[in-house]
Image (cartoon, rainbow, N blue to C red):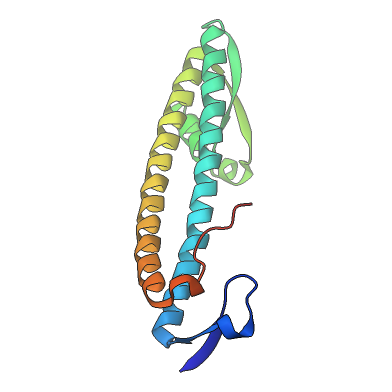
Length: 162
């Protein structure tokens, strides 16, 4: 068993408490750190998707103001482009390799439908990410209880405020 001396804040040598850390304790601490990093990544991804969703809402608002027959460029992903070209009968194998970022002119009504579909997809992604974040928070909560029960104030498991 390893022995570690952990203290909080500036203290004198007499106030330090020796805490024995077992392998299982170290595993819990590592699991806590790993899940904290995962939570940060998931929360960052949620924020990114929310920003994309807001941008799509802004685009939808602009498209509603446009003339119905006005052609507007709409970015399509590789799968969307393949689907778009298959519907119109223009698919060829070499096209699949050349697709990068493609803008296809659509009527504002068609573009608005695509924006709404993309918004629904993003909302679903955000919902799944929120469920993931909740599951991670539950794990962190359980680990906090276990670790604080053993180490008390000798361990800091709170997130740093940046």
